[in-house]
Length: 111
Length: 115
Image (tube, one colour):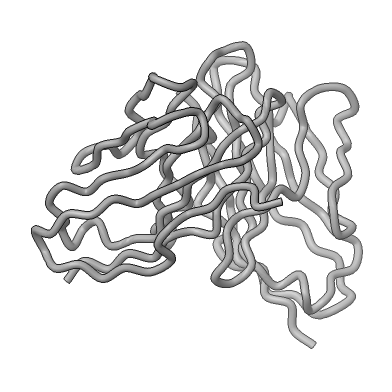
């Protein structure tokens, strides 16, 4: 009964380094999302995928890329990390009634 | 486009007192409305949702919310709070009838329950 699983839970990067955040869901949902959470700003959508093979930009896509590898997995890549990308990142998937299920998050610090 | 405004960033309240967390939204189309709760160092979990039907919706842990279309509000209430309700609460909205299911969140309200 895992739901949405994100890895890693914590990561520290130096400016300019790259990394990929992994996300997998086992609920057979078509839609998946990446959000970032910053103090006082709620969650903001980075990218989403309505179905396998499709991705679309959200509110704050600059500096990120995504891959919908298959129906289960949706990864987020930072090609050249910047201090402004220090944040908590959440992956989510949604069922047909629009209810979203969230992972536990990845805390990323970029020095 | 849509937006969500949570009018209070922090709400301190004593244990067993009632509480209301306010949420107003703006949208040019019909919407679905949600409240999510985030406990410290955890992800978000659904508290309650309004999809259709009765405008008074009940959620987990004794919370309820009322959808008011004319005032574009979806305030969250609990008649008697517990220490364990201390958390951050997010109001969110998504459009009906579109393929875009992503949520637009408010900035959150931190509920601090004091003994």
